[in-house]
Length: 388
Image 1 (cartoon, rainbow, N blue to C red):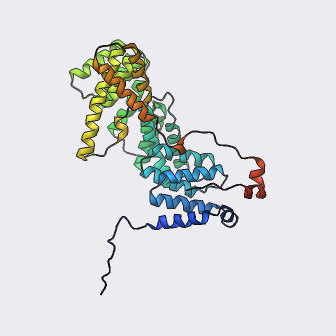
Image 2: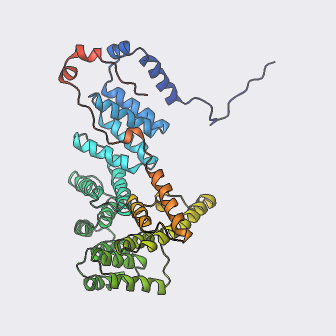
């Protein structure tokens, strides 16, 4: 008697339902003329496509499909954008979440509450990356404030995170006035305010002070007494903005005397300060030190698997890499081998950073001709795009 072999539950080689659905659509789409005439890409189909990609976790395919649909003037329903936001957030693609939300605002597509909350958190992540990347005019905080005000004006139930996330975005972007406004709203709504939140706001205020003496007064407030490295980094940034190198060195020496750990943020800040002061050798030495420590720490995090690995923590902004390469031009003939090691490390990181996906490039979208947009006969003559 023949024995039946049953597949175990969760077996990976089994075809998933979402894959079957997409394969059926692909088979129909092989005959483009027939598919276009009898199966128009309606908003409900766009929604189903996006949700299938979401179920499969294929965020790249989902974004590519929505982008091509927009280029072909297909009406994209808000549910499709919501699906793209969810799958992008699940895979840590926060910049794409912010981009989808901005597109929904531009096209006046109403997002659901979950998408708004995910976009708020993504704005915070993008603001942190903009701060690390030395972006001159960060703009993710603007969307965070707009979403925060929209949630309150529309009567959406506000959770604690919905207050704190835009406040942190404003503080990291140096917009301490907007952060203070959100803090006042938290007071009016009787929301708990932690000392860490106060310190983050005051740190942003310290960085924007006009003098070191004014910054010191804020740093000596009672809530900042146990602020630790947050206070010192804010003072260092204030000194660097004002080119007050005397107090910069004094604060840096005080941190060393108190044996504060040298974080990656401080390492990046010291590299930038050394470049501004035209200390070319110091730029290369500090970058080589960052390269050595970051590689060791990243390897340890990946091997131990005790905490979650965040690749952006070990990244070096493009602006600082340019500083390292520019500093090497002044030190080409130096005998120190670390100088050349730092140069090769910067080149390697620079080459790695130039890789990008084709669909995420900022190429100009071709505007269709009017006869194609408004004539059904001309539209049917066109070969529809392959979405997969």
